[in-house]
Amino acid sequence: MADSETDSSTPTTSVLRLLLELEEKFEQTDIREASEVKEELTQDDLKEKGALLVRLESSLLPSIRDQLSCYFTSLDVNEDSREPNPNFKLTCEILSSLEKTWDETRECIESAALDVVPIGTHDHHLKKLKDFRCARLVCGILSLMFDLRLLFSMSISFFRAWQDLSQDSESTKCQYEMSAWNKHVRWSGTRCNKSIGETLKLFQGSDFDIIQDEWQRKEASLNLQLKF
Image 1: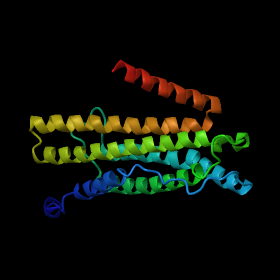
Image 2: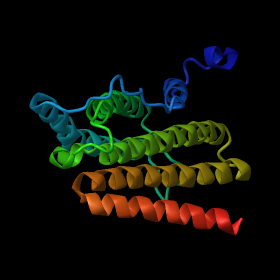
Image 3: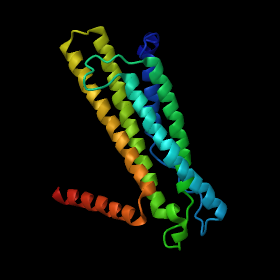
Image 4: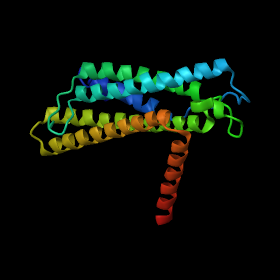
């Protein structure tokens, strides 16, 4: 706290403060529980929830992907950036927009995927709103939440390394750490984009594709456990 107050005029302070807040916010990885179990969804329910799924697929998740791309541009991170030159104002603006989009995404998935007809009922007419499909969507969003938190954590270390390097640009140690966190940030960004891509696939996949993918995931996990 004292360091934050002392360095209040440095260009990285606002970014670090925002990243720390986001890291803490995304640590809360729970999705609210369903408020009720319905025996049947009305046509209005189906229409409303269907529209939310369309918004997730066509707008919100693609927006997060685009905002992440802009975020990395603002950080000036790429394989050749030994001494990145971040745009701090732009970074703060993008992070604020990303947080807003995420809040909308979370609210959207909770409203669309919860309070659905439970497994065991005749749900063929529910199409993309079948319980198991919605459960996989929730898992996909939770996975993205975890990856975004990891990105924020890596970004905090990135900016701290940038601070150290800016104070001692000739330091081999500072140069090495800057390069390392540059790579870590790009790696965590790749994870985020992969999570977004896998979640978007769930909207287009058939019931069989999703069930098969789930079995393959469980089989891979079981094989890994057996090896140990």
